[in-house]
Amino acid sequence: MDASIEQRETLNGNGTIGRPAPALAVVTVAYNSASVLSGLLDSLSAGLGGIAEYEVIVVDNDSHDTSVEVALAHPIGARVIRTGRNGGYSAGINAAVATIAPAADLLVLNPDIRLQPGSVRNLYAGLRNSSAGVAVPQVRGEDGTVSKSIRREPSIVTAWSEALLGGTLAARAGLGEVVADPVLYRNGGAIEWATGAILLVSAEARRTVGDWDESFFLYSEEVDYLQRVRGAGFDVLYVPAAQAVHIGGDYHSSDFLTALMTENRIVYHRRHHGFLSSALFRSGIAVGEAIRLAVGSGHLSALSAALGLWRGR
Image 1 (tube, rainbow, N blue to C red):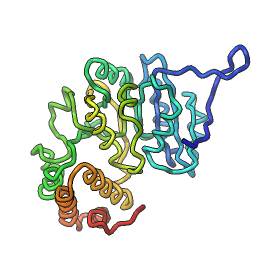
Image 2 (image 1 turned 90 degrees about the horizontal axis):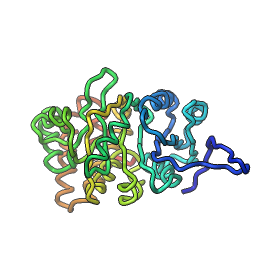
Image 3 (image 1 turned 90 degrees about the vertical axis):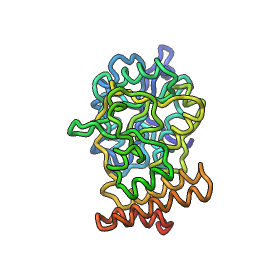
């Protein structure tokens, strides 16, 4: 992958540059993320407590703010990869993965994640005591509430349940894409997928599954990746003992991102199902957005995407 790399490196006794291969690559993809990136980097030392060997990599997708300067100045000692373009979240992850050792595990973090002390060690405890290829933590909001970050595979049932009942009622009924089961959030266990703000991927799983799908640009890339993880015979494990805070929520204030998220949900479903199923899935989303048009402009953008009228890319 074509990317220029800036990094802090050490000189060996013979004057050549040496860089040991760490056991864990911690990767975050930045795009105009200067306002939140330092908070993530601040949280890494405590969050990675007990992890002996790791490397922090910040992939910058051609930011127009000071994201690169923030990353380079931070004492955590991040290696910065400038991609020179905004190819999306998956492309940023792939740019980092192309530079790490095959035996390295991968921790993917959004720039607005804040790791809690010992969280990565707890993720590893889950990963090493099961058939899991991916471990995800309990995610909390800034107010401390547990986020409903666990999801079901998108389906006709989830789309129409959310359309007719609304997301909250559909989740409570066990029919929506969002999983609301308090027992699972309390005790943990195998899940289908979770929001991709923080994922620990074993080296074996990432070598087996391969690159992230760059065609999604943003949203649904984690749905696709975790479906391939499960398809390869690995579990995705929710580990409530590991905790992180996620600021998040950009798509709620952006009609563009709302439409992009809607379009990618439909694209993902279409890739795994036939014409009739895809048409029913799309219509369920369209009906739900049409019912809620009066709530805000985001529903109009989502409806346009569901009807194929949005041309955001």
